[in-house]
Image 1 (cartoon, rainbow over the protein chains, first blue to last red):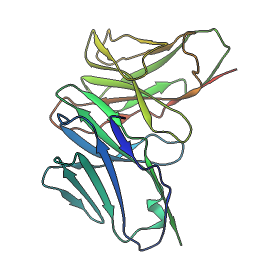
Image 2 (cartoon, rainbow over the protein chains, first blue to last red; image 1 turned 120 degrees about the vertical axis):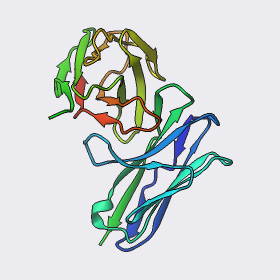
Image 3 (tube, one colour; image 1 turned 60 degrees about the vertical axis):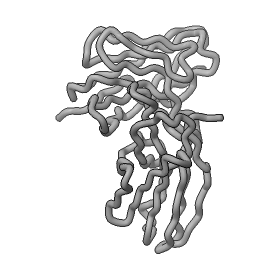
Length: 110
Length: 113
């Protein structure tokens, strides 16, 4: 089983739609969780950190479910500019080993 | 401006040659990373270093080597032992706190001819 797994998609949604991605992780000792966004042929950029209590940043909401070992990202009112690949990142245990999921591709159509 | 500089941006090499990719950061970050990305795939961890003179293998370290003689620098050598080295290589660094944002360089595209 991979350490961090994501549905590769693509998720093809109309503008204004709500879309959710999940990311599962195998190590129950994992400590920190992040969502990154990557545009084609560019380096990834931090979208948001994921806190135990869940957190929201505008149209984006991230949640952590430690019992089931997954994190989620919800995007409301999708914009064309949200089209990108969304990568989850998990910090394994107390080391600084940071593992990326394979990414979920989102396509927002007019 | 603070950031991470990778060089070269594009590199071509013949089979059987070693090549070294440079990564320099002036963010005063302790931890540095090398990832590899293949087309349509996520990032896979090659090596990471939490402090100077110490580094750990990631999931795909075979055929690669690194050094961390200075805090600012974490070069990656792709050796001839790496079976399929053509890829996009990304260097990153992070502050060593409980949470932190990974800062990436712009990447190096290596093509083996």
